Image (cartoon, rainbow, N blue to C red; front, side):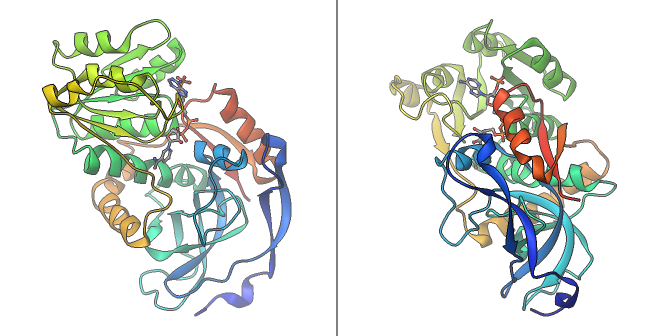
Amino acid sequence: MASGQDKIPAKMTAIAISEPGGPRVLKPETRDVPVPGPGEILIRVRAAGINRPDVQQRKGAYPPPPGASDLPGLEVSGEVAALGDEISRWRVGDRVCALTPGGGYAEYVKVHAGSVLPLPAGFTHTEAAAVPENYFTVWHNVFERGALKSGETLLVHGGSSGIGTTAIQLASAFGAYVVTTAGSQEKCDACLKLGADRAINYREEDFVAAVKDATDGRGANVILDMVGGDYVARNYEAAAVEGRIVQIATQGGAVASADFSKIMVKRLSHTGSTLRPRSVEFKAAIAAALEAQVWPLLGTRKVAPVMDMIFPLKEAWRAHERMEDGDHIGKIVLDVG
Ligand SMILES: NC(=O)c1ccc[n+]([C@@H]2O[C@H](COP(=O)([O-])OP(=O)(O)OC[C@H]3O[C@@H](n4cnc5c(N)ncnc54)[C@H](OP(=O)(O)O)[C@@H]3O)[C@@H](O)[C@H]2O)c1
């Protein structure tokens, strides 16, 4: 390790998953402070974002990839505390936020330098910790995989989620027409305030008919879907000719029956991805694209994370309870102090 080690304690407080189960299995533990290897940075964590995949991990349904920390937490903000070898860009004390492969619910975390970005201008740590996981995911799936262009229509399911609020704002900022679905009027109103052109309460309205209505019958060019199940067949109906459907989760079921002739007739593409197991090189390429194209928008607050609630690190279980209750709009964050 190149520098800064003398100021770093040997032990830290972290929130561990004591066993698979409900929110109360999240318990404070004393752990060794990680030591950054070549190409890695140690961050003194000030805030950590909560994401739905953390809930899945807590339940035992989303194991960390090989080599990753067993602690939950996919995104943090804080200060650079120490540098591994081969780091040129960062200095001890720099204010940063980062995508982590795990381990974010802790006072210190080590991350690959390619997954680290400067704090967006004017951002607090709690705001910055709400950025990486959603912005990396939306950038790759909507703009790279889905190839959304200005003037096209994006349909975002789960518009009030951390992912959804990010997709609405970014797509709108880059000139797309945005249609979204959410499960209550309050959530639909929040989506409209963020820039969605049409918000559909899926409990009261059929989203296929509403998307057709909003697009003069053409359908959506790109669909970002976190539901799966019976949404698969309905997404094929709601898609435009040459539409791209990007699957990022299957909360409504991973197995579906659909009319695949729609794929041929409309020349659809149905793809998907998961971010966490991807290579450090892949994540570094997304970080570079975000810094060039999205960080200026964050700096002027043209786009910004929607902050739902902040909990202290030791009450991570309450943060998970809030997420599972499903009343949140936007991001839940841990204040690590
Ligand atoms: N593939 C990847 O790389 C990647 C990365 C990060 C996250 N994700 C996934 O993206 C999703 C959102 O993550 P998040 O952290 O933003 O979570 P979140 O804020 O908890 O959002 C979950 C959303 O899912 C919606 N939802 C759940 N079940 C639904 C159903 N049966 N029908 C319609 N909507 C349903 C909820 O909408 P309502 O309350 O309106 O029903 C809620 O807005 C999660 O599924 C997560 O696993 C994927």
